[in-house]
Image (cartoon, rainbow, N blue to C red; front, side, top):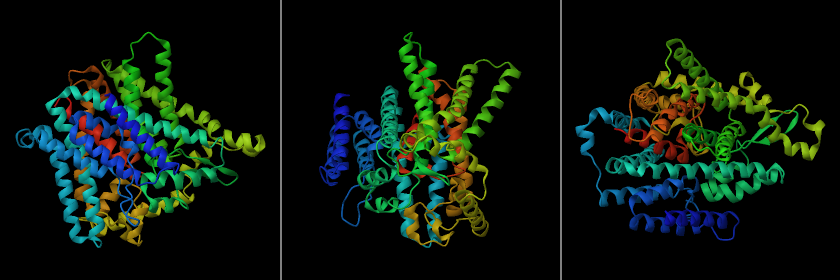
Length: 505
């Protein structure tokens, strides 16, 4: 474990040196080479720990001046897969002999085959192939984790530990941003983060784009902008999505806490509240609206439990409802914190009317520019699905629906709805397959929540049970955005799903 920490610290130091221009971005190539060497000659579980813990730290490789956007995780994951293949082999026989336990994998394969078929109708074949390679590349993480856990379930706590480190890094950077805006104006923050940080993590193209268009701030007609926390992500929506996936870890820690030390319990609640605050600070209205929907679902479940006198998972329900109640209570507190820098700089009168509630009210304002634009995109997407229901316009070719240049695919052109996005690009049958996959995942997590599936670890039983809340939340959130396809978010999500399907199967 000490070697893993040293490697992770080396990554952090290298990023620090690149961000502050002490050393050039080519240092990322050296760090990637170091990680490849470590992956080849270290135990697989150690390499996997480093990879998962490094999810927030993956950088773009400056291979050439015109090609500097490829994230190093893509190479590292292929290396990790090859090491698994040559050291232990891939258990393909499992798929043949245990169809019942591998339905999600077969369905995912069907989904990818439909995506490949959609290339035949795609206007831009190259963009479609790139997106398919991207999805397959990330799916390798699922295969690696599932194979390792199948052979040794004792490594699950190690994987979980790496995921906690990744969560800590993401939240740590997020709150660092909040502290920074207390000591510099937003223009300087914008320039510093875009030119020094985004450049290192995502390359010069995205840096140039975000220099004039981003989702880092909330704007008001009567007031200066405020920060929308986004951490190491290029946008605040991806950050909110990642934080939602982190919630089961905090709820499990609180639920399983048995130590009599009150200080530790207070600390657990502190970091849990920090995570909820981070979702609020992201300014993502999709995250807020979907939270209300999931809260109502669990309120209905709690009512059923009360009426039917079901008590075996009563405490989990109470904790989940408490989570959402705390979330909604935190809004006025978050508002005070976000507007504090302006209060200090401009005085009481300048912010007398400012609050997060202004942005919350805009959710039902259909004349607001962002919401109006999203509704128009949804309408055009539905029209496209009606015209091309079988294979869509071709995977990766969504800009065609909006009559945009294909270069807009790099700028995040999408349906702002994961389900409509896939239906428009690959067809309604592919969407149906995807929904069945999501249903299988939700059903499995729900069985853990009810105690119908149990493994040999009470901690993991509880964590998987609490994964229900996160999964329902992100399914609801995906009605308003496609940030599940952000590479860092999807990697972390894939690690969650791999543990869910590897444990007690």
